[in-house]
Length: 65
Image 1 (cartoon, rainbow, N blue to C red):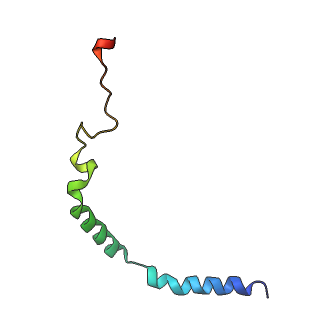
Image 2: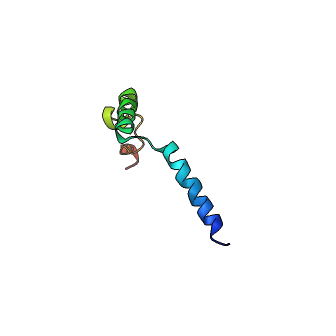
């Protein structure tokens, strides 16, 4: 029976699904906690210093111009 392996695979997925589900409220609480713990290292919140910013404008040597 060619379809039986597909059915068995789908049954396995359906059985696994409740084990991997997380309530939205719990996921939101986890994300909020992670954000608060890492706020000091987040460059979008704290900004990037000009010395470590790889996208800062390059200095031009006025002597060579």
